[in-house]
Length: 387
DNA sequence: CAGCATGATTTAAC
DNA sequence: GTTAAATCATGCTG
Image 1 (cartoon, rainbow, N blue to C red):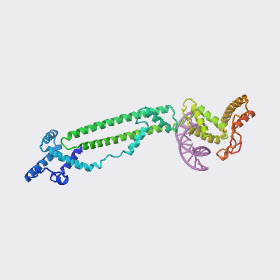
Image 2 (cartoon, rainbow, N blue to C red):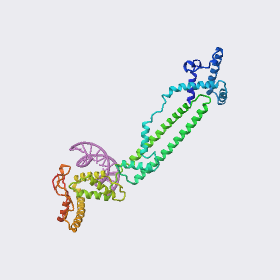
Image 3 (cartoon, chains in turn red, green, yellow):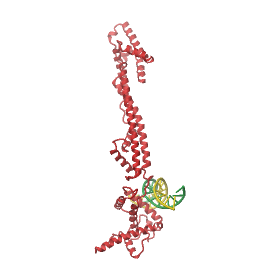
Image 4 (cartoon, rainbow, N blue to C red):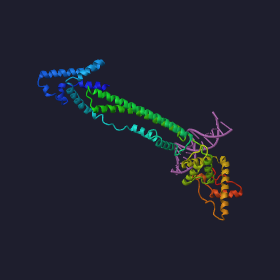
């Protein structure tokens, strides 16, 4: 502990004779009235100071004996209070520099992240919710309960455990060390002037040191979580094919709206809802609108690029839709009503000008094809010709 | 393992 | 904001 050495250094520089001028201290006049007497006292004080200064150079037993001697010295109380006063004065100048420092922004960032990831903060309940939220956010709102997800959760709780045990260890070590230092200082305060404020300051220093170690722990924990996230929750890396049922629903819509395969926002929501309901092995528990958009975007471009390849699929779904439509018509007829099963929306065209379309609705095309025996092939051709 | 299928992302146009 | 188009990265199959 070089605190002691520093103190001694500061004390050694104190010229007791100049104290009144320097530190505003006044040696009691009783000791000053006689020059010889004052000289003797000065000599005495110098002697005491010398003993204090050299105490560290001596062996433990010797020092102990010297300490005891000094403690019992008749000048001790007076000198002690003088030294305390000097320290108080010098302490004033350093107090300004060592004021409460503002919370470290870096540490705050780390804390916030750990809290958001569910590593720090409340146990399981809230933490798990935060994890689920993070997972959903990472995979574009898809809160799937897949195998990887539970694996992710397991790994995260492992990180969490390590983090907490380490944190506890640090806290314990910090407390132990603080107690130790405080005891040491309290013990020392019997022989050298140590103000409570000084102890407080020392505790602050220790805590800062330990919190910087804690910050390293938090930093590496954050890194671990980031790595885990990128490995498990990056939707792009962990692409999963949609279930057969979901693809079927989407394909049905696509081929029955081949002339205008652009579902509205409501239609997308409807499709997303329908696809979410479908359950099959490895299926997602939710199906987002953006996934529907992605699917239609991919489907349109891929269909357009190679209509021939999709011909068979188109026929298949056309037949399927035709059967459904036929049932609908049959039901309508049976109800002896003349209303049409579908509302044609004519006069549209593809976003791409090259794909100008016929004015007939896909459903009416399908219905008429049922009776002619021909399925609609492509409603839009790559060369832009109307079919 | 190669090659194709497919969901997601990026970029640029509107 | 949506979209087409290109591209990426992974899943699947022979």
